[in-house]
Image 1 (spheres, helix red, strand yellow):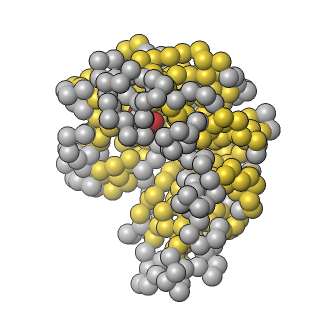
Image 2 (image 1 turned 120 degrees about the vertical axis):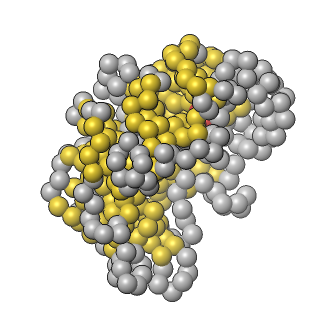
Length: 365
């Protein structure tokens, strides 16, 4: 069971202005892991150590810290500060997955401007596309590692343009909802592979978006709003919800909304309120909304209703800022004001921390 709280962060020397970060890459800072409030790992950061402070270049998996780093010529993957493998080429990691056997799968795209992406197992390429992009994260499909992606060229390993699923070393075409439909996300759930397809119509009102599962196609309700777009799947164990944006017919911008797996709209937020991070836990959808200005509050919604107000100074600087554990919502904040301290909220109660730096993520393992 995932019942242990882990937090990652970056600490800088006292007095250093990490917001301006004029000594990026050379300042003596460290990446740390907290386990139930106690530091269990500190890794030095910088060019010399081939470890970055960027929140999107490290992640915690199974209680271990995995980092990626691009030197001038290669990409380096480390686990708890020790090199696992390295390979030629400078890649930006788009998806990261550790199998039960400990194999590390990555999807990366070139930082040098080359098109396409490469999927690797322990640094060795298992799938390459000359032009295209991943649609899903790397997924565990009942013990099999798989990826849904789009190929834009007939010269790829896939053999042609279109949508594919890569599973057990084999590419298979993905049956999409229809001609011209765009698959925006995919996940593995109770009924097998499911994905969201945005399908065009003759006008904005004619188009539709549907969740395609092993049991059928479920169009998303748009109610009084226009066709949804930018839809993502939120996984809740083997169940799923969908989040996305609906254009208002009166031209007044977009509203954020969530749907269940049958396409029923669960709720929508007020116009202009767009979450920084959303997740589902036991059927409840949580949306964290960052303050848009110094006058706004950073807040959390539960199923569309205001749950917690965290205040004006609380900002997110992490890829995963919140997790549900032991019946409480744990959320990490960083204050981008030069004198501010990072903080941890348990439920609606915020407690400040005294180190100079920021939290980069929170998770349960």
